[in-house]
Image (cartoon, rainbow over all chains, first blue to last red; front, side):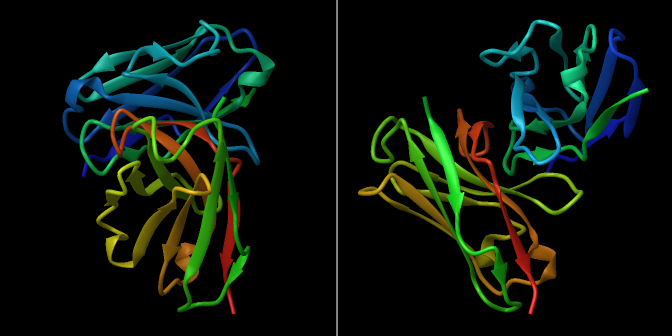
Length: 108
Length: 121
């Protein structure tokens, strides 16, 4: 199965700053089938991005995804107070689909 | 709008079988060519896909859990269920039901709110 490694483990930033999260796969992700989720404490994950760069319905355009092959990035252009959370990547290019271990974006 | 809700016991004894049900609204399990899935998250840890079921009844399981997992659907009630046998403390987790898109291991949207299941005597 494909192992996803997210970095950094924790990102300490201030509102208004830019956040760049990385997700690296142990082998190439077929068709760039990679998704990103946001999870706040006590809540279920929320889909942000699928297909590496397509925003899900209702997701603000400050969230963007990029990358291909084994290296993918989630960028939050300007952090809003409600954006601080844990973010997970997921590959669905091959079965079983697998998730990264998460990156926590915390308020500095 | 599709909405999902998990239900079931919050406490299961070691070696017994964990049983959960996901009830959804806004779709019909027997149509729409949908997949339906289960994911879990141990406290403070990451996410793990457990398995999925297609509207035809075909099932797909994570190889790491395959020997202990059964997913089934009740077409008359818009529900699908998870059974995980021979549980241990390592199976303590929040269990989510969700709709995988594009395939049985596709991206998940939407998700239920999740239910915590603790394995303890």
